[in-house]
Length: 331
Ligand code: DP6
Image (tube, rainbow, N blue to C red; front, side):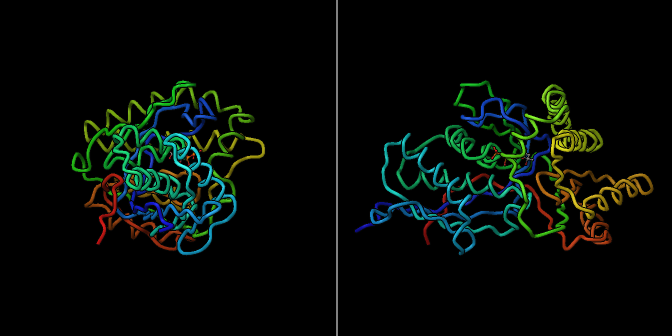
């Protein structure tokens, strides 16, 4: 027997309503600002981990294809961190599959690292708590800490040197039945990963300090609006969080521009529909050109139709709230 142990797990991507952008501790990957997200049922990553004594290094396949070197290195570094912490030595074969565009601003690292941590815990029978799993996932990618939980999750800002920070569940998926309609404007991977972009923003953007100063109050408003289930309070605040984060990126040198023409076309169509027809639908964008629109279930098909009228939108994808990361039961 060369296989020591194996396990499979899945996790869903999450979309931040209050954005995480910037780190208070790069080595421990602690966020500089608090963030709140919704885990999405429709965006799922499935991962299988096989620890095999014959391997001389970790192997990573994404969607049945050998991963790029940078992705291999990142996952292997994370596995090495887990191995050191839990006194393991064996290398792993990692097979991961996303049912959505990988690395195009649709949070594949969030679901990817969350699924990886759950599979690691299962493979070695560690019995870690959700809060511990979330703190470990954060070391891989801070947004992954939130994907451990279903529904709405919050990740506080970290204090440098304090490694125990994990996300917490804020409201479960049943608390408020919101929809997210994603306008897919490209299936291409993003040119600059969020980790590198955050460093560039911190080092060069005039607006970075202002972002870190003001993000917590936006996050607080978003938390209150979720508690009150008030879309008219939530919408403007979630848009302000996304726009302020992108303003910080735009003021970096060189400017970090994740949007494309279709992104702007969607923003303008939404604004027009809100002003002329009172459509309650609000947009957010991450490190990519896709636009994610929050609305009530009754308005989802209207939003889908509106987005499809925008030039450059290839397709839409609609999701409700999804569950937290879990072990895949053997069949
Ligand atoms: C724009 O979690 O991908 O999606 O911790 O460096 O891996 P690292 O960054 P990552 O950043 C996500 C940034 C964002 C906003 C968000 O999801 O909160």
